[in-house]
Amino acid sequence: MHLTSPLFVLVHILVTLTLSLTIISRRINVATTLSWIILLSVLPIIGPTLYFLFGSHSLGRKRDKAGWSIRQHYQKDFGIGKRRVDRKDLPVADYLQDLSWMLSMQTGFFPASGNRYKLFSESPPLIAAIVDDIDAAQESVYLEFYIVEPKGSIVKVLEALERSAKRGVDTRLMVDDIGGRPFFTSNWNKRLSQAGVDVVKSLSVNPMKAFSKRTDLRNHRKLIVIDRDIGYTGSYNLTDPVKFKQGKGYGEWVDVMVRLEGHIVSSLSCVFNTDYIFDSQGMDYTKDDLNALADDGDEKPEFSEGAVMQLVPSGPEMQTSVIHELIAASIFGARKTVTVVTPYFVPDETIQLALINAAHRGVRVRLIVPKRVDSIMARHAGESTFDNLISAGIGVYRFKGGMLHTKLVQIDDQMTLIGTANVDMRSFYLNLEMTLCVYDTDFAAQINQLVGQYLKGSEILDPDQWKTRGHVLRWKENILRLASPLL
Image 1 (tube, rainbow, N blue to C red):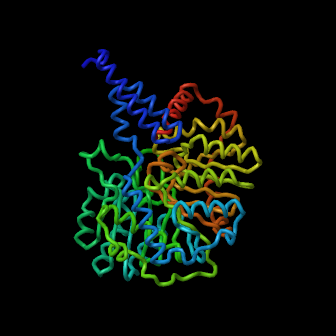
Image 2: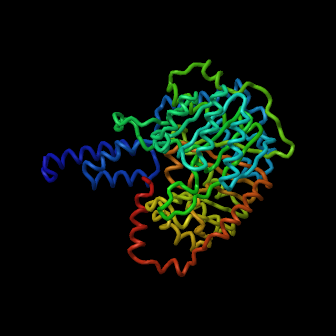
Image 3: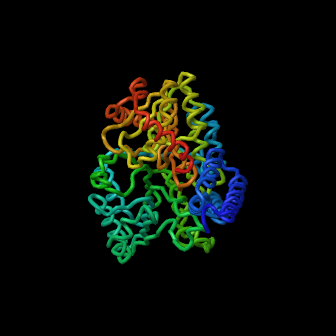
């Protein structure tokens, strides 16, 4: 069938209309809807193929429903909310109290008091702490990561997992099927399995189901739970920052991780358990399976110097884009300061408006992104927004000290969001993400010190100089901006 034949044109029109009506009926945001319709219209065959591969955001209705059911089971039977802090008792402004309540209603996780924490911004002490905690484990060691690359210092962590399993500790490693390819194709996969580690592929990719199940919905979460008493989360993958993607001009990867003790660890454990059940058993789970993975019900220690924290899991399995709503609402409500650190900045109109609105209200707004980033498309799409941001008085900084991979948002020195989510469409709508929401001024002060280090290693964009960049670059940015809802 020739591309210009009447029959081909008719088929193309019918396919475009059918898929366009399907997209419209999903009630997704207007920008994404229009982007798909344009793509379907101008690219016969290619457009529909891309839509079948990447158009759906759902992991399946059964998983959506089951995820909520499992979280409710843990809440009810194992008291994850026993240490919950009422909205009015949160040590933050009224608008942040209301926001916390919204998160509780959407995720099932309430803020919990008395949590102790330690920030890690350097890899060597972080790896040493993880290895020590694994070696001291008595009952269970659970890890969930997007990328595991068995090189450099990460070998120490894998060796610790091997030792853990051999001494009889329940040891589990869950890794995203795509991000974990360096691990799954290495001898470490077989080695750990032979030692007794339960190795699980998360969101396993089946090429035979490519047209019925979207393959680029990824598990981007990064968490560790040890003996259900110690937890870790943040932006670190299990990769050596000195060796990961070196030779490509990005420099050393710069991340942050938080070690946690207290009741918040029960929430981390719940997220791991839920993901583990889906990826190891699918929908064939029973109440006994849930109970076997659950917290034993013992009271968690509550530290007098501890902080109030709330866990916010997000992803296509949730009914709404809770992380997008959280970031937008917190910026709209900010009264003094907004600091955003993200490696991939591809905001939609709502986030842009929130940032600009905050600046217009006199809020000091700072955006820190890496100068060199491993996604050229995301970089140019994000830079297309810089003109408007700078014109509004927002300080845009580009970090020169490596591949800045930290993801955090801080509001009014009262609330800090830190975790795995970038400020882009993929994190908002496609990936399984996890964000730790910390309502604590001391934690905010430590984050401010870290941000200060980032600022010292950054260059601020000069408005006049930025306007002088070439027309070809501007066109590239604007074209990629049109595709930003699909990135």
